[in-house]
Length: 263
Image (tube, rainbow, N blue to C red; front, side, top):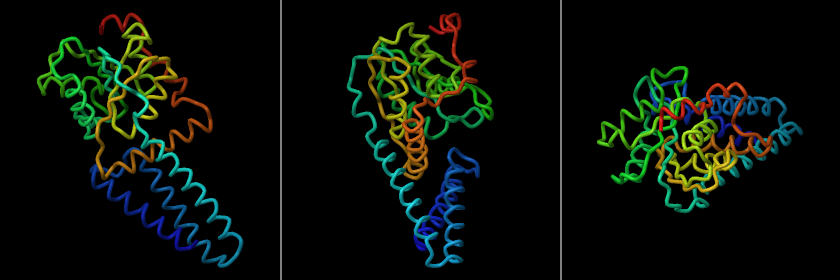
């Protein structure tokens, strides 16, 4: 078991620094996971050297393996992606927001936007709902950043609907439903492949009855980080039977009057 703890600790440390270099910052989404898991692994490696051959090493090893198997199960669910979301002839495509840096869209969000543009394919009868509010360290809302990107790519403003209040995937769909005025209207949604499963599940829990998922690609380097975050989210969702939504986010839910101004 000592070797398992050592290898896992080294892997977490190396992957954390690879991600830090890739995103050009030490603090990124889910960074805490690799730091904590790596620290625990090195700590257990040190303790098993102290309590060499004792029951502590066996128990710690069994718990760690069980947690890794649970995480692997979550990753397999993530890989299922949008297989249960067939084409539905939707006239509205919800583009789920993602992290922006200042006013610039992130690489993950660019993948979503380019996929949405391809899905739009110049059709005048389809509208894109750009869904994403302003985060604490963001200069503008994700929706505004997405709109600027879309306009720079030649998408007509008439094809874009702004939803700039949401702060989570849950409120992405809640506010989009308010704008649409119904949860029974067929809709498509765009997100990165690692996010499709959980996003679709949340959309159904919000009440959407006809969904089509359009997965955007993901970076090979950051896939494990993003998929791992989603796997943890799925595990917690199933274990605690909760949506990733908190009461304080009620302030991010759009009113009917606000929705009218965006239609």
